[in-house]
Image (cartoon, rainbow over all chains, first blue to last red; front, side):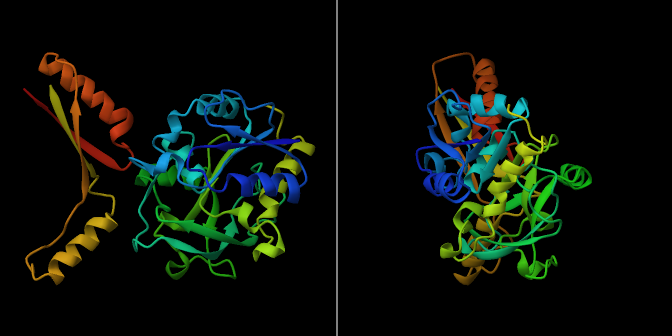
Length: 236
Length: 80
């Protein structure tokens, strides 16, 4: 299978994602410039972390107008697997491909550390190879990861099982002390209603092999391979 | 002609930056400060048009780009 990793001006985790997909998971991967208009036959698309367009105006607000985003949107509409990591998650929110928005971390600080993250649902292309309620140790590095959605939308997201990752303690228990940024309901990642678009603030690609301090993130990308093989995901 | 757009977080959204600014003001001795909400201000220069049309245009811009309607509200003023 083939991953496409979109490169925006200001992306900084693009090569990490490319490396994790190609060298760690061992699949084909291709970097796609944000001014490109097609996804080069990819089966899964990654919007990587960084500071696309300098985070001017709001995080992800300008990136959503990049030419490649029209292709990403139609790929997502056809059921293609799209993963937004950190800044990529913020782009998906601004683009309306995922519900809600990000505001500044509640303690203002830029938080950079490895945190426990619980897998809430395994019926997405990026969690298909996870165990239910599995706790992954993944790095976060963001100043605006404080997930917000209006009350009625938040209720809908919970009811539809769209919360895919939650910040927890190492044993998998949710608690205010383990919520690093003030996200509502300790939300670390969500999916869309169709479950093919997933966004998360933690960086699985930066924790894909033991030399990086944790290999827990590998399963997120390896899940796509499994989902494709099992027919849970089709070539879009 | 010019238009001004004021963008602020909706009252229901916690404003961590405004909160820190408020704390700093209290530390400075302004004990009467109860809260601060921080926002954004845009001055948009555009081709001359009648004020109603200009306001409609700029409102559309605010809706599509300048503000994120999920968390922010905005106010548009057109200057003669």
